[in-house]
Image 1: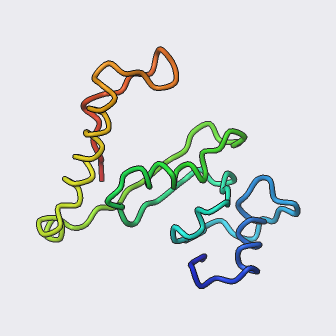
Image 2: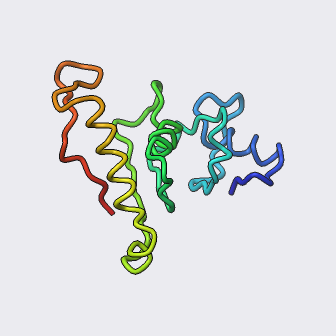
Image 3: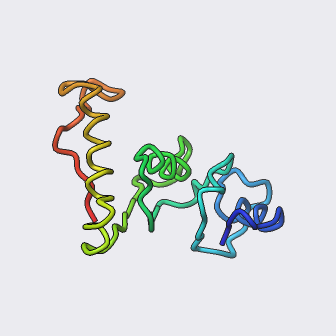
Length: 132
């Protein structure tokens, strides 16, 4: 586990076990639980699964989290992302799902209905939504 209170030794262990460019790679751990503090300058591209236990109000942070494992030199053909949302009762109070979906749709609207991402074949869909 890596948090803001983790020391440099733990950071080096995380890098050795999850960063494909580690100087002395290790295989001592299969699962890493981390807060967003680990996103600063650490690549985790020996991983191919991201589980978001929380959904941030800013959806670009989700993209940044996946970007820690979805690197140019990853050995994986696919990256899997799983998102956990609040219970329906909690969501009725905080409206997190609706807020996240509204922000994603706003990004799509800014880019336009027929905008393309990176290649001519990849179109942005107006029907994009978050799934739990």
